[in-house]
Length: 299
Image 1 (cartoon, helix red, strand yellow):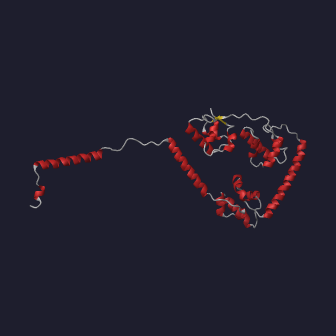
Image 2: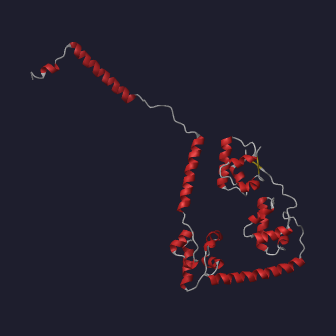
Image 3: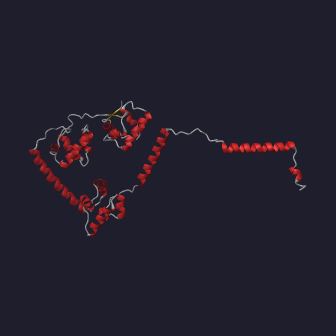
């Protein structure tokens, strides 16, 4: 004990110093526990920067999704497996119908026959049918059938043309019966031509007729040889600076992605001074510019 005693022997001044040190330590501990040192300044993220960053993420996601999609190569639809059918987007019932048909030792020899047996939707058939590959003898047989059908149709139309006289040569006023006088245009195609005309609010360019689904260029040229754009349609334009997203999206040549880019550009420049500024948008379809601006204006 005598050894340690000198180490704990303090005079009054030293004791006061130790006491003061303890008080300081206690005060510092209390400050650390009860005082909030966090900053009240909140970091704000600029809206434009956030949108640009989100756009980059969306683009990367889209690229990744496109790269993951399985590539389609020509194939014989008679040998579609369960996995292949799933990749094509067919339902289990549609695949089972095809397999049941094949178990009878029967083969699908045309696109229409494939749809008749599997009962796939028109939209799915339009996507996968271009990749169907049938044996050569099947293709020759189908071509012969089509040739006979076309000849019969031409013959009927030739007789019909002599009987019916068209009411107008203005394609924007022609009736369905007027259009059916053209060789190769039947009830289905004439109906599509008029429906698309209504969608466009009238044909403004002759080349718009080539956009009608199922109407080949040769038949379209026959239509244009008889029917012309006599009076251009009066189209109600939408002010791109004040229009809503849905109003711009109604434009027959603008899809969702392009509409989104237009609004992003509008937010960036605050207001379009001239409709030609749309050309400044990245990846804007310049080949469709003349058609798009028919429906838009900048005020």
